[in-house]
Structure formats: structure tokens, C-alpha cells
Amino acid sequence: MAAACDTANRMETDPRDGALITALAAKVGTPFWLYDAGRIERQIERLRGFDTIRYAQKANSNLDLLRIMRRNGVKIDAVSNGEITRALTAGYAAGGDDLVFTADIFDRATLERVAALGIPVNCGSPDMIDQIASISPGHRIWLRINPGFGHGHSNKTNTGGPFSKHGIWHEQLPELGPRIEAAGLDLVGLHMHIGSGVDYEHLERVGDAMIDAYRALGLPVRAVSAGGGLSVPYRDGGSEIDTAHYIEKWNSARLAIQQHQSAPVEMEIEPGRFLVAAAGCLVAEVRAVKRVAERFFVVVDAGFNDLARPAMYGSYHRIGFVDAQGAQVGGALHPVAVAGPLCESGDVFTQGEGGVVEFRDMPLPKVGDFCVFADAGAYGAAMSSNYNSRPLIPEVVIDGDRLRLARRRQTMDELLALETGEDLMLDSVAAERERRA
Ligand code: LLP
Image (cartoon, rainbow, N blue to C red):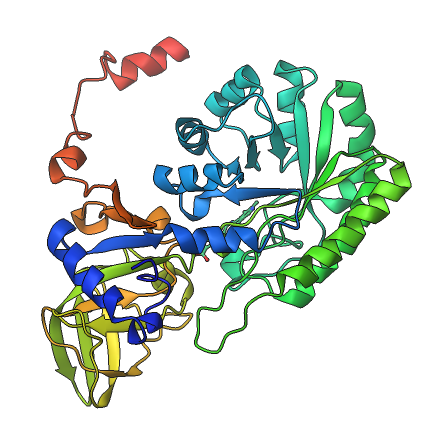
């Protein structure tokens, strides 16, 4: 049963997965997310060549997954105050190097919290360096560097180069070295994340850029981080990244820096997608099969409020159908687009960048069958919203022969409870303005 959400395709070879999906649909209702802990653990093993694997929890921050990471010795990255709370709740400690806060700014509450708890901070702007120095002398920091180039599966996931808001611009490093020393901050390391869904050629350039950045800064470091960004094959026939080759490339950058300063340098990686994408799928129910002109729309009960990636980036997810008995739906192929229930024409899971609806050759399911979106473990549940007043959906984890409800379905009452309409007790906006004048 552990293979249930490896990919929609796997269901062709393992009929037990279809049976599990129908059983779970009866138990928790549709739509729901399904994750496979074993698959996550196999991905972790592929990166053991790094001294530290630090999970970028933005990809999927469900506590159950964070606990799986922790029991496997994977450390954690947080990009918000909320993600810090999640990491601490999952059992990560604040004071050591379990947890690093990475961002381009501090909001006021987060600045105070990382200072109070001694959480190392990966600074993505010179302002962050100054702000943490002013309230927490000797604080441990990393520098997130924009090396002047970037890459990603979409323009929206490219995080380097002159059009990126992320990181410290590499040309500023020579002036920052003395500033960090003068402020008495404790520099842990340098970090470069050039984008998400990056191809090999670009990833390889980062090692050399790291050596240049180290030289430009002119301070000793204890660690370097390759950031995240490792791609996964979303399409049939897509190739898996050669992790051994990637680790080797990074190791040479690490060794060059180590040799230069005659002090040890550790090597970190900060993946999100690579660890969890293929371990998760989204299961929905087919609610309508419509003929439109010469083609078909299969409309399911999950929308882009659940899985936003196709609508946001034109991302491709493999899709399979399972009937109520758990068997893979077969038969003649037709041009099919798969869409959701939202009152918006962009709510289509088969679309290219720019929102062009794409039809795939697929067998036709019938109402009541299940629709499985593969490789949805990363940036699936994490990017869901309540658009159209649709509550967040359940998350289920398969862990060995156990099944856990990692998150129950949100209720409408919980949503409405936020909308209290309480009186803010300002005499009036005009009086308040006068008081401030
Ligand atoms: N480290 C930093 C500083 C990041 O900004 C990110 C991703 C990661 C690590 C993890 O990247 P990964 O290994 O998952 O590629 N919503 C988009 C992806 C946005 C990624 C944002 N930052 C998607 O669905 O493809």
C-alpha cells in the first residue's frame, strides 16, 4: 500500500493503490491529499552526501511531515513566524542549528522572536543584517547571496539575477564584510538559492559563484548552503537528477573554500520539492463529464484553491482515473481537459503557461470515479486557499502499514469564526487622526 501515491502511473502496476484510494475516499471524503512517508525517506537517502539536509518546509509544512523529517535527522528552514512555530511544535529546537530563519525582510514580531530564541538568521538584505545586529549582538547569521544569475521552471520561481528581489546582490559583498565584523555578528555561512525547478547546467554554476562570493566577502565561514531548487520529473520520461554528480560538484566548491581558509567548511542543501513532490497526490471525485464541441471536460470536486500550480505556473501534473472498485480507468482515448468547480475559467488543471487550456489523450472516466493528480506533495496543500469559501481539505499520511489523518477537513464554522465584526473602540477615525496630528 505504501506505493499509493508514488505517481498516478504506478496505479497501473499496483492495483492495491486504487483500492486504498477508494477506501480513503469513503473514510475522509473527497478531495484529499495523500502522502507516502516511505517515498520521502528514499529521497532523503539520496542526499546523505551533504553534511546537512535542511528541509524547506514551505513546500509542505504539515506537522506530520515535519516529524518524519526530524526522525530522519533532517534539519529545517523557516521563512515566516508561522513556520518557526510549526518547526518548534514538531520538536525542532530553537537554540542550536536545527532551525534557520531565511527571508529578505523581518517583520517586527519575527525580528523580536528570532532574537529572543537565538534562531540563526539567513539574511537576504543588508537591512536584515543591521536590524538583527541592533537588537541581538553576536547573533548567528548566514548571508543569502544573489550571484547575478538565476533559473527556474517558471519566471515566477527564478530567484537570482538583476530582476530578482531575493538575496544580497553579489557586488555588495566587499562592503558587507567589514560591516558584519564591526557589528560583532557571528557569520555561520553563505547560502545561494538561485531558483526552483532549476536545470543542471545552472546548478553547476552555483559552486563557482559561491567561491567568488566567499572571496569577495573576505570573512571565514563554517558552512555553505546550496539552497534548494532540485527538480523532479513531472512528465513521463522526465529524467531524475543525478544527485551523486551534484554532491560532487558542491564538494569541490566546499573544498576550495576550506583550503583557502585552512578551517573546516560544512556543506548544506535546502530542498523542498525534491523531498516531498513525488510522495504526494491529490485525490478528487469526478462530478461531471461534459462534451464541449469535439472534446471533453472532466470536472472534479477539487479546484485551484486546492492545487494552484497549473493555474499559477502552467505546471504539468500527471493525471489518472480510478473507478469505484479501485481499478484504473481504461478504454478508448479522447481529448480531455480536467477542470475544477471554481467560478473562474482558469480553474483548469491541464493548462500551459499563459492559461491556454490543453487537452490530453485520456480514457473517459464516469461520474463517481476518482481523479488522482500525481507529484502534488510539494506546493500543493501548502498553497491552498479558501477561495470561493471552500474549506481546506484533509491530508492523510501512509507510514509503513499505518495511515494517519495528518489534517482533518476545515469546517465552514472555523472560517466564519474569524469574521467577528468587533468594535475596534476607536472613538472615530477622525478623532484618531486629530490625536496623531
Ligand atoms: N530555499 C529557498 C531560499 C527558497 O526560496 C526555496 C523555494 C527553496 C529553498 C526550496 O525550493 P525547492 O527545492 O522546493 O525547489 N510554488 C512554486 C515553488 C516556489 C519556490 C519558492 N522557494 C512551485 O509550486 O513550483
